[in-house]
Image (tube, rainbow, N blue to C red):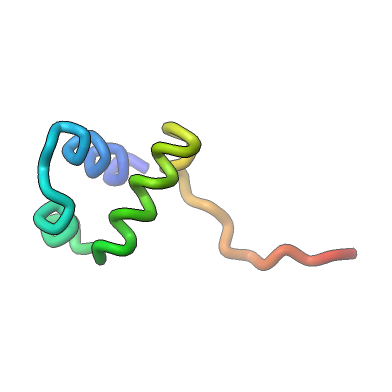
Length: 57
């Protein structure tokens, strides 16, 4: 989460998405996903989410 928080903070300071993604070693698609989750959920949106599929009992 720490890296994602730094990423979002720098975006909000006005840095360009493409340059930050290159520096952090992520795709622009991932960068926009991180930003969207932050905008929708806040700090909690920056935490890792389980990739385990949801199963019905």
